[in-house]
Image 1 (cartoon, rainbow, N blue to C red):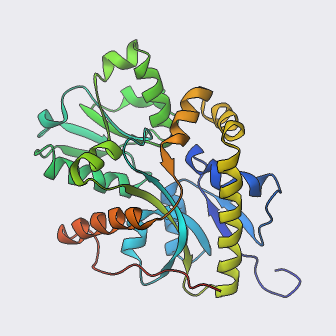
Image 2 (cartoon, rainbow, N blue to C red):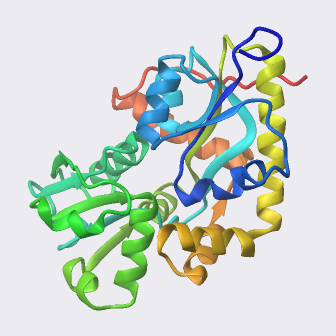
Image 3 (spheres, one colour):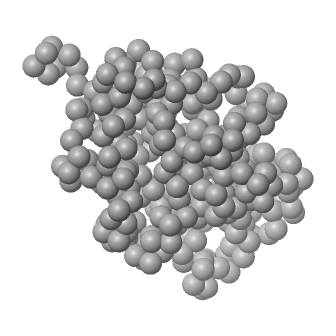
Length: 289
C-alpha cells in the first residue's frame, strides 16, 4: 500500500528488446512512473492482465480482441511493422507452400504470432501443416534441435539472433534455407501494417491512474526513439545480437497506433472473427483527461 492506503499501480513490461525504446527512460529514472514494473514474457503478462492482477500492460494484440470488454486501449502506443519485422519469423527446411501435413513447431509466447501464421498458411501458402507447441523459449536456439520439426515459428530475441546468424551463412543458414518474415508476408498479402502488441488498461483501474501511466509510457517512448544508438547498444548486450542488427531492427518498428496501424489491426481482428478465433467486438480507447 502507498501513503494513501491504495495498492500501487502495476505496469507490465516484456523483457524482449522490442520494448526497450518504450521503457528505457522509465528504467533510467528520466521519466517518472507512478507505479511499479512487473516483468514477464507475453503469455505471462497476458495471463496476469486477464486475471486483473496488473493494471496496465503491453499485451499481444489477440489478447485485447479476446477480452475487449475488460480492457481499454492506450492511444498512440503499439509495437507495429509496415513490412519486415525480423523478430517474428518462420524458419523452415522447405518452402512454406510445401509444409502441408508437416510438423511446424510454434512458440507458446505469443498467440498473436501463432494466429497470424495460421492465417498465412490458410490464405497465402494454401496448405495445412501440423502445429505443435514448442518448449524452447526466447534466446534458447541451442535447444531447437531437441524437437523434431520441418519448420518452426520463432519470436522475440531468439528470432533476431537466429535471423542474424542465418543471414551470415553457415550452420543455421543450411539448417533453415527458407525464412519467412511474418510482418513482410502480412504486408504483401493485405497491403497494411501489422500490429503485434498494444498497451491496455483495465477498465476497472481509475482513469486518472491509467492516464498517468499512459503519459509516462509515451514520454519514455519519445525519449527512447530519440536515443536509438544508446538503446541499440543496450539491446545488443542483452540479446547477443550485433549493434548494427539492433539498429536495423528498431528502424523497422513503429511504436505508434496511427490510422494505417488501426486499419491493419482491424483487418487482422476481422479475419480472426471470421475464423471463429476471437469474439466480434470493437476498439475502445482510454478516454482523454
